[in-house]
Length: 588
Image (cartoon, rainbow, N blue to C red; front, side, top):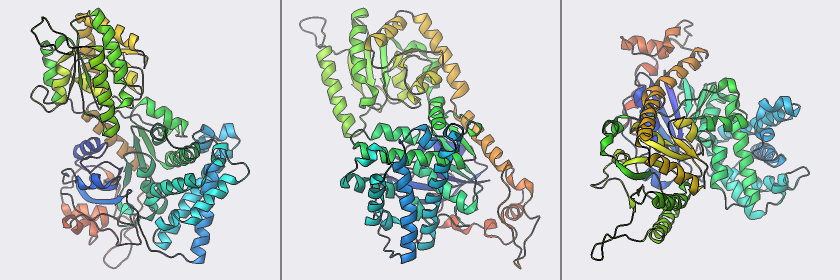
């Protein structure tokens, strides 16, 4: 089958989030064809280039979300009226109810408890969203209109209208300008020329690698071309919005949260299947209105091979060394870990702590400097005698050097792996430690308990004393530590490998396609329809023994599908419909 993979700030860019997961999925499902539709978040991301693409990637189309697009379109009176009506309805709904609440975002699922009001609001949001999409298709794009004074005034009227939420009524002109700019960026996929029969309309299935803006092209492909949509989320966009907007005004946060909540509800309502990466994400999806019958939990797949040697050589670990591995940022709460280690040192004077990781941006660099200063204060250099050089028991290191070439070497150097986060999605670092056969002590955040099960110790977050007591208990009991490590490795190999992830998505693809009727009409050389040209076997995965048969099954004799000439063209970035239309590109 042919899959349209939808990403935002991810695959195929080298620095993209979730790029490794998407690459493993595409390479693992080599019997299918993939077209990648990628939205980029920054100029630096695009400058970094793409990863090497496998041959099953037929075409890549990209579009930027970071640059301002001047479409140069002048709308007529009728188009301006259509835009005002659709955008005004959208703005009214964003101001109507408490953002992020179940009644505001749950869509049809909340109909039983809300007397049908939530289902009505979901329909109104969908009508406004698809009305803007149809206007963009008719007029060639909407970037300028979404940033126009008309849009700002529509937001202002909605915020001042009777019944608007209290936080929306507090919006000032700078807040409205910010919200309009953010909505334009989120709705930019409406103006792309991806929704024709030879683009997303030609794929068998759209697979969105995240919710939010990345899933919007899938919604439009379903609306215009009736292409089924699969949505995979390892982190729910509404939750991400709450975590990444702490400095914005209440009005900005409420309006954007309402938009993300309603977009999530519409995405879940239209998706054929939704695959959360863990139970934590699943709970958020259900809160936003996802139907439980559509949910299939698929844990992220990770490659266990690099960690096999560490698991097979437990004697290489220092029994008195604790290891922390990850990105250095405030959410990881290394301050609590350092205070906990101070108590560990009082109980076990020979204990050592290795903090292995690189800072995440300027904020992470400042946090790392603060942690180093705190470690120097808590643990003055110790020396065995007056002429010896002291050594701090806390070491801040990075992988890639001679001592720790890889993350596997970092895990292998210690007998106990610690996680001290206050915010966490799926703890991939813990799973890596489990592959290495290491016992773990973690804070109870995100999907930590789901990942480790009963193979590690879990303590409350921001509780250095509890963290220290758990670490001391395992440092003093090597037999228990070994049992937990062996159980952790067995659990990781059963649940979190690349193989199980690929097998799960392969099964889901077949499930969706088995329920989807054939949408395309195949024509012969004279233009007459061929009613039996697409047999049921056309959707069965596998390689056709006869290339001509494959062309017939996919598109009929003489169809462009039998001779994909676009596979030799250079990739070109997609633009708004008003500028130069994007062309197709081949895999590199």
